[in-house]
Image (cartoon, rainbow, N blue to C red; front, side):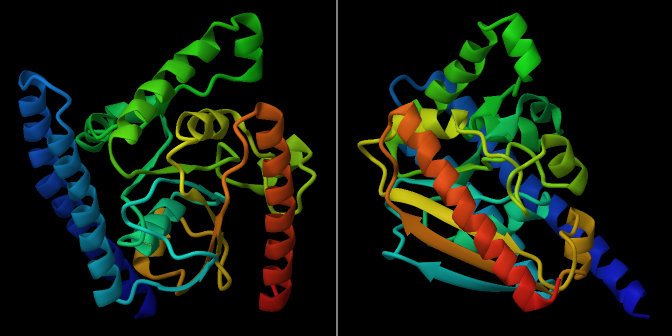
Length: 288
């Protein structure tokens, strides 16, 4: 019976999310069309489009709470966060569920999250183009071998990030960057020979570019650590079925590092060491 009810909850969640997405994607398209034919910088239109992200996330959060999908135990450290601030947000990455957890938990505390997105996702029906119109940075994430063969490929991602940062400068923004660049798995961890127990090696590239571009606007870096103490990291379907009944969410506001590349890399290495130690302590405390 429990498995059946979990499946029903998952189906209901996917229907709700689909309807909620369609409702808010349509006005995003309409405003983007108006923006195309209206001269000027269109800050007001862009701000209204960003507000649709908050309403969409708010609907998903309301469903999560009403149907008792998962309880998120959130802890916030450091200075209070501001909805009118500029933030870089970093987090460990274990599942696509992380994005939903981040969005719903940070909703109302900082500006709507925008995050680095793989170029291929622009073809996802409805959502992919909407994210592009909203100013999400689309990157190609070339491999080291591809860049070694053609160093000019680096400029393609840099141009996309520079264009996105120009939009971020217009109004308060929160930019999410999963420093690991991909979701954690034991296989990837072993293949990388990662020096961390619970994390993949971090990548400084995208973070460094945004940090430099927004240096004079940033209120700080929101460092988030997500733990699923009662289960392994749930997939999107399992999460909405209620198979991750509790999530531990720890966020700390930190000063942004200096923009120089060496300073950024040193800062990230120290942050990752601390995050790995925290995850080790959490797992020991949860008996996992």
